[in-house]
Amino acid sequence: KVRYSCESQAIDVKTSKIRIDRGNCFDKQYHRVMSGNSHHQGTRSSNSEAAKGNTSTINASQQFSSWIYAALSMLVIGSALLVEIMESTPPQVAVSGPAAAFTIEHATRAHSHVEALCAMGSRTIGSEANEIQAPKYLIQQLMAVRAAADPDIAVDIAVQHPSGAFTTPFLGGIVNVYANVTNVVCRVA
Image (cartoon, rainbow, N blue to C red; front, side, top):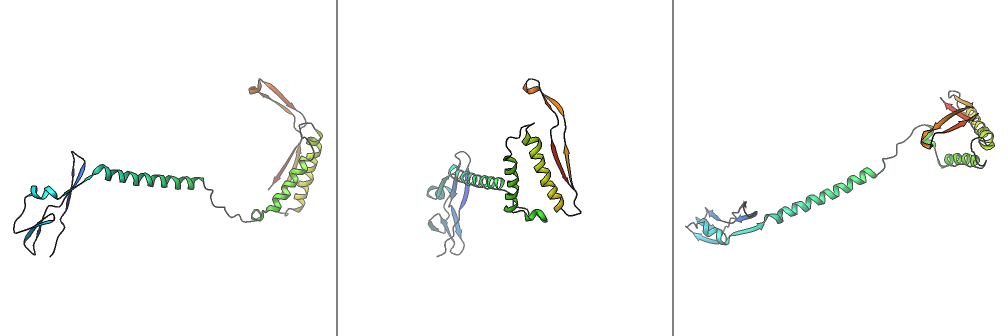
């Protein structure tokens, strides 16, 4: 025996339910009408007979809620991926030339300069550590850089002793005055 599955779906607008109608199916090979699970030879059953026991009802809101859960899940996963992408650091760019050779040894050497400056004591404006010892140390180190540099690289060192004054309106108009403050400037070109 050959059976055909003939189903049609319709959404009832009033009740928001999906009807699956397993109504009349005509089997041409045996010339019989199949209505749902019952078989009638040679006659057609009416639509009302087919609709009696052969209609399955699925609540449309249940089907709709599963789509909402799927959409919300995708939204949460997408948001998590977006946050991960936005918060992650970009890949490190390869630097060519002398900067690429910067290592922990170089960082340790730079830190030794900071330690040497801090060992001089408090460096407030006008103190011996700030006006004499620190500039002398910086000039000595910059002269060593200039001596080790390639002839094509210009290392200019300048020492300035500016004087001036400025007001601070946010502090009630206090005027700060400085005289002969030592600045050490280095330009590499």
